[in-house]
Image (cartoon, rainbow over all chains, first blue to last red; front, top):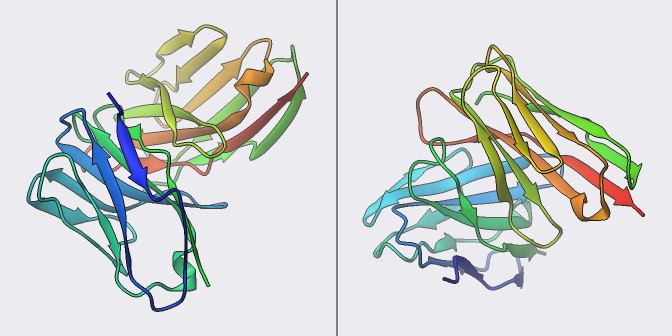
Length: 114
Length: 111
């Protein structure tokens, strides 16, 4: 199993550009989440999904969209990038809710917005 | 959001020393998870503690959940350079989807 994969590993965007961060998992997990990690801020939940076709907002959803058309894939879209979105983004999946079980994290995408 | 405070924020020790890191909150959690994150990688789960007063051991790592389920500690015995990383605690609220993550303790163990 590859686990949770994320692409790209690194990305530089200009303010106002849009892009999609890809996330895929091969563990047949129903639950998937997107986090951002900033220095001194810990991990903050952006959006999550409890199954194909079902998504919801986390703590910091503004400026991001998600969709979940399949169990395996959970892309994160930045609509109009801003310098405040410079961060490391992690996708995670779990067999139950994150509060109920182990989350498996991808290797992260380091995004810089200039 | 229920806040989790981790201390110390940074810790630099020599190989063979013992250390304890703390994770404290004023809120009660149904369970608490500890993750370790190495540079350039995502966090990896070390342990989940569920019962107040519970103690779990993972080789040289000992995890304890407070009796009131508001705090936890991680003790490492005879630290090794391979223990270097960011240690994150994450609390599960009594209801709801999300985990609340602390900001982490960055540990450096030098030979």
